[in-house]
Image (cartoon, rainbow, N blue to C red; front, side, top):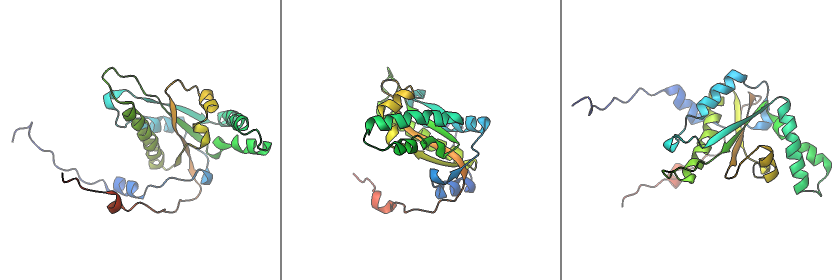
Length: 203
């Protein structure tokens, strides 16, 4: 067998990684605490998050990070958007909505930003890649011992909030990733029965 045709041996199973993925569970943001990752740790997480399938290397996504006072400052935009959409609601509801980003020490908005590709990479593939970035960021945070949850909630789809984030035409918020410290371990939840959602194509 030539070197070109040689099949590499199956690598030894990385049990720690396999166990981590098999037991992975999102941490509820309401059960998070601080401190969150420092600048260096967050930079490493974003580098890891970007290592996803990305047809033709378009990088059709970007990040907006929030920490410290910026979380409360952006909360004013969320509260304002909520009251403009729901003017009949009491003012204390606006205060509640304005505290959304204060639930965790770090929040990362993952923006789906499809690129017009002359070679025709479908937009749907680019959107899926942004979703993979969200999940990879969860893994990057949790593998470093932090708590993490991927949420959208109503304000991810609100045009006023999107404008405050500086979204351009064709962009959408794939998710807000909340990162902090584990205050309480999550309990296991029901998982799908794979046998009910798996089939084998036989022609």
